[in-house]
Amino acid sequence: MPIAIRKTMLQVETTFVEGGKNAGQPLKLYAAMAVITNPWAGRGFVEDLKPEIHAVAPVLGELLTGMIIDAVGSGAAVEGYGKAAVVGLAGEVEHASALIHTLRFGNHFREAVGAKTYLAFTNTRGPGNAPIMIPLMDKSDEGRRSHYLTIQTSIPDAPAADEIVIALGASVGGRPHHRIGNRYEDLKELGRDVANPAAV
Image (cartoon, rainbow, N blue to C red; front, side, top):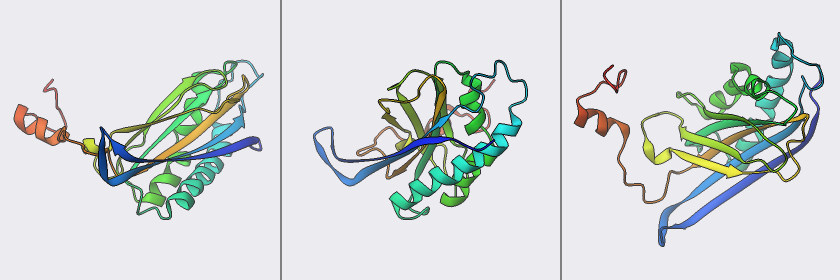
């Protein structure tokens, strides 16, 4: 099934001042989004989603990764990364999940930025102008709290009921003036192990 892309959108946000104090390094957040026709729309309950996943997800992964890298300038410069999908009201959350929770989508981004951590994500359902929330984390260190960030945006006319918005997000830099430490400090103070932080 060929992918039907209605539009793409690139958002770049730069924060120079946070908390009334100049940022030593401005934080730059990038969001690349594609609005596509839901490939399962109008077909009732589809049991096997794999054919469309295999046909559509790699195209989106390559497209959106390219948009991010072109905007940032290089994969090496990307520090935080994440993904999101919002399916229109006539679709299932499973449809949103299907196109982003596959290595055929995410590995394009991982490879381009040299990432080791998993891609933080959201998958939701909503109408046009629904919030698109892209959570980010450090591409190499999941415990680096300075890079726990969220890009919040929307597209006024998307998703339509039979559409899906697919998005990738990236950061250059972390939160300005971050001062809550990192996950490893908590683990050390609590005497817990990285693999079992709640000791259960």
